[in-house]
Length: 306
Ligand SMILES: Nc1nc2c(ncn2[C@@H]2O[C@H](COP(=O)(O)OP(=O)(O)O)[C@@H](O)[C@H]2O)c(=O)[nH]1
Ligand SMILES: [Mg+2]
Image (cartoon, rainbow, N blue to C red; front, side, top):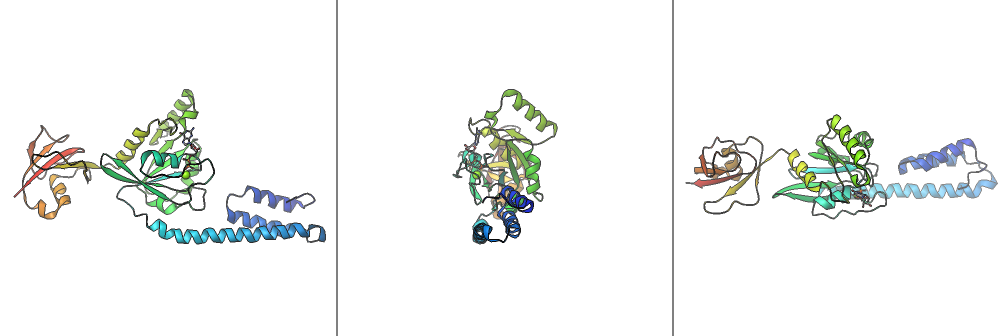
């Protein structure tokens, strides 16, 4: 669209159109351009061109709206796990790369903008504990799902620059969950730069981790931080004469042996004869304890029933 010989009003609208972030904004400025375009013979072709673009843009907006509606059922099928984590960040910050490094899911990784068009879920297995991770489209994407960000227990704010923290927070004003800042792509920084960023984040008392997906730096530490943010107690059950199960019961902190038994079954809880414990809360291995004993993370418990 040649804008030579156009009025300053037209040029202004065109500039805004070219800088617009969303299609809705683009439509507003395109309509302004149509209004400002001279209506004489010499600009007939240009006006027709603008009108065609307007129709195409409206069609595109409608298509996205429709796919949003149909993907709603899609999103509803993302059932919230007890422990849900959402990846939030700008395009190309590395959300999908992190997703593929910490979960079983394969989220599309690409250099092109806005590759993740709908929420993708994966499971991070941490010592038998299943944590649901959701890779959300980038915050500026029309399909960014603020609903999931609002209900997630933990938000992983993936950034590659400090100014992005404030920018991201603007997109999730109602997020209830805890936040963990992931400063990604540290392989692109030198030691001094890394130290400076760490110190700034520390001084602001942020919960954060420095990460490099490329060099696989701090990936295990990230998994541990995610797990620890849930503040849960894992209790492994053991049958007499056998090894403990490798899938733990997930308990709230300060739970008692009775709570553990009830979590297995009410009936079991009322039939306990003897309880033995190994691990952090025991004074010695195989200690016999009562129902009011408070368990700690990684305890192993053996119930003998009547
Ligand atoms: N140098 C570097 N590049 C990375 C790192 N993590 C991701 N990338 C690259 O950044 C681009 C965008 O990554 P992607 O995971 O698709 O970002 P998303 O848009 O936030 O999902 C890809 O080319 C990745 O290979 C990293 O730690 N270091
Ligand atoms: Mg992505």
